Length: 113
Image (cartoon, rainbow, N blue to C red; front, side, top):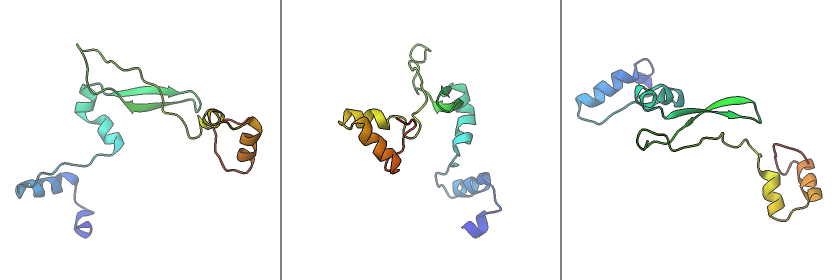
């Protein structure tokens, strides 16, 4: 199918499948899903600020509105290693042990001790 499908559009293949009574819909990229008219209409895409990297990120909001109100408060997802030191402290690791793990590249953390 790839040999034949590389030059054809998604719409072409959905139409072919539908003509044989197959259920077929396009598989969207994240960007296409965020730009889909239904996503725009339902205001499900939210923009949050990641303060560590100083960038805005689009995230999926709450899918249900109550009395037309969005029940969510949205925050950026953590960056890789953002909570590593805190978790290791909770597990009983000392600052010195954590520094040694960082020095040996055993752990990755967003901050250094």
